[in-house]
Picture 1: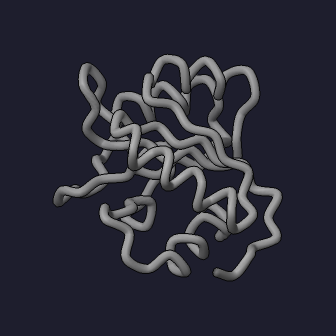
Picture 2 (picture 1 turned 60 degrees about the vertical axis):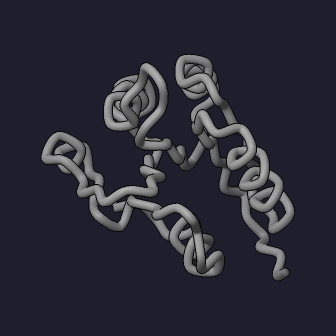
Picture 3 (picture 1 turned 135 degrees about the vertical axis):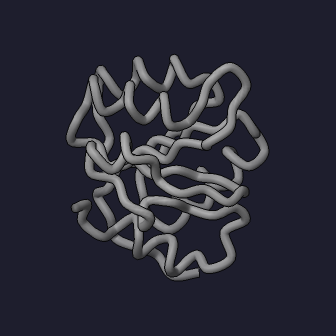
Length: 126
């Protein structure tokens, strides 16, 4: 596994704790600074206090829609690059396009190509 020298901080929000934990370990192992939350409102508080560079949000979580969470994140930390993590067919809504998101900000589960995933995380947001 290649290590990436990165000062990029990432917050992951996903209700699937096993997926969250394994992705966090992998991101940290390759050199990203990463933290994770299974409770969206806890993540939102953390983002408001110390905004990361990137926030990866699961699309479907109990009681919370990932799109709504992205809009809340944008309201408290507009410079955070948000990405949607999903295992389903999904296209960025017009509302999210208005805040600068595009189809490139969708990460499909399961992640098959980690090099492509890391490149996406390291690329500047639009």
